[in-house]
Image: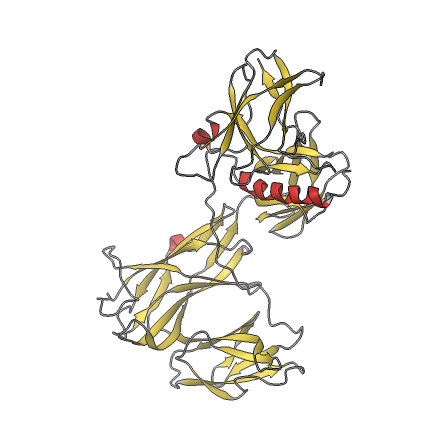
Length: 481
């Protein structure tokens, strides 16, 4: 097994790990470039905590108990409730010395949605632990989920969603302005995610500006809610609520004098259905060189994952994984996985679901290749992990280095070492940087040309970095024909 890393090696390894994420291929298709998306954070699937000061129960007089999820208290005001306030009472743990607002306070239904209930303060009176209080009034707007939107199959790691609702009574309360959100609540765990990207159309397909004053609003229309699901959003059955942040008294300067929140609980079912196992990332845990963590979606004991490490100069190594959850699997690197660079394929039921360059530290300070291909490959395929063809003398490679920072890192030399006779070495020439895409100045590659008269055979490709330290050989052999 590789020895523990020195500080210098760790710095190198972290740089490699960062590039490894960049070079990862999430699908088997080499022509697909993943679009970076930052999903909206979701509320963890947990109930009110009892570790430290906490609110154990919250009740609205005349309505009933509120729902507490994490640090959020949700009060749903039913249709027909005529008061302008709700009287809230709280049951708290013994270590709560004061609560603001106090238990028994009448709280306005229409108010700033960012209000909180503070249960802990510091010596200066600053709140250090608070719950968000959400008071959701019943809406006169009606919404139904289209049949085609009642199931979403999770088939991508960065899974987009697009749900369509039919709206009616949209023209009620003229003068109000409305925005729309969609709350997903997992029925089994209480996990909550709120999507905020919406668009409203009339029946003719024209966009409706519900958030602007003095615009015509039809009685009926269509609501589209779109976005990307959080990476930790579990599959299963969900309760959906169309949330309607409403301004009851718009100000003349675009502000809102009287804000509030309305909601429509959707009666139609919605199911997030797991598809094939999807891997998003794989790598060593922290500084470990044995513990491997695989994160993704749709993992299950019925869909076992296998790790396959390949290097043209060694025998392939396969490793079984342990499934911790539908998002996490673990594996232990065997002692036969010696230091060096590999292609790591994650297989689900024998089918590749993920591929990436993977580095097992060698125990010495060595650099690594980030990418090697025939000249023009990336511009044509967008593939960071191509299978190398056979080359002829005089052909040119395009190269990227694992410790290349914005393409500025220049290496001192590059050469081929004949397999079976390390005394036969052949220097490449060129060492020229270029842009595969003129509009992407940070994406720089380097040209290196093979010797014209190099003998046929199989070679290992290495480079000398700017410290004159020889790199680990690229995991694929260079074949000269």
